[in-house]
Image (cartoon, rainbow, N blue to C red):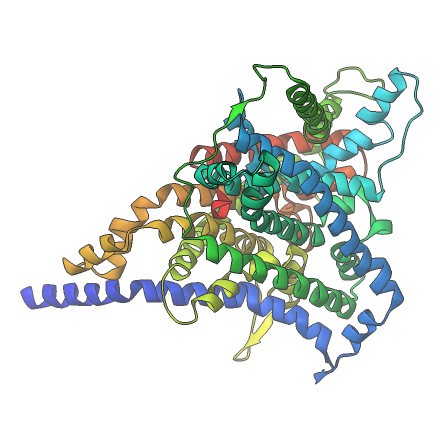
Length: 573
């Protein structure tokens, strides 16, 4: 009996020693099956015709004036303008957070995480409720006798909505860099005769430029591949690559869709590689030992300079209120008002009636909510282990780690439309393996797409914490006989647990708000999620769409509270 027990213990220890390797291998297989194979399927549509290699579909896209000017160039143009608008709104916020102390500062800074947990389709609904023909803006203009304006289906509406989404990201990135500036370097420059402006230009600004570049790069990536906002505010007449790919998929023109997807993915992956290179160089950098002191927003001495600064801050606060507060408030207001502007619960009553009497092919609120929560739970189960595993792999020293980092973060750069199209063309339609046709459909396909999109955010939350751990802790555990897996479970994971929880909250929020791949993979009304339901209602009447959007807001707010509670400083940004 003792020999059997000893054999079991040896086998268990052998398994424990190799468990981390096995988990890493399993993660690689999952990535290969759920991401790389589907994306390769999309790319194959662009370079294969009747089983032969061809460049004709891609060449047709790159030599077509319509695709180059109306689709690709417009996509780049709107992303460029959106990046400028996001910088214009985000940089003053970074200046306020880093250089001033005021009531509510920490709360407002926490809100800069909202772009990562707020569904983009909900933002689009808010802007429709604000800038629509009967929206908040035109109602306000009518009260003062001004004519209405039409801002929907314009480039300006898309740019402002993108700034709503990405300016907080810019503010978060640059604030962190500004707070890491050592005040002693500025004091040295001042002691050598430099004035405040010269010290800022020569000492502070060079330390901010990399973070400004990172914020601009991330913003360009996100807006270049933006889908729900452009679809809702621009429609097919202002189609970006992402929207046109969706249009081609609906028309079953897979070769054209795949060719456009190749172009979009090449741009996004290139920019993501640039971001990852910078992020890797900054992992070991800590905050300043002596950060710059903050001052009060309200000056004690009202000089012309301080008065002008205060007026500027007040004006900026007004712009922020118009861009960030009014759209969400407009969505809530539109959900409880009728055509005459009076209070009503008719929109919520419509949702209840649709739930009770709607046909099987119609979108119902309760199944959409349950589907969203169920898909989020499935995403959590898949994305968190994958994200933690990749965080471990990308913070260890070994040859080829940089390549692993880039490969693991590729889902971050590939749009949800491309992932959804790949899963549709690959696993949903089926693949032959040893004479057996394997298909992954319904909820499994949607969870797969959500998990692929969510796990990089888990990695970016956990990896910086792993990188800061003292290696001697693991070495001590190993010297006492602990296996590498045991040291990870008993020593490292408890120390990075807040990052794991924040990453899990991100995964849930991203799954609940995911729209791009879901709208391609959802099979009938039975698998619609809340964002898809919002879009379906928007195509008919604004009121029910805003009511559904408010329900989505309530659900995603819980994720924000968890992220804020446990830090969730995504990638230390």
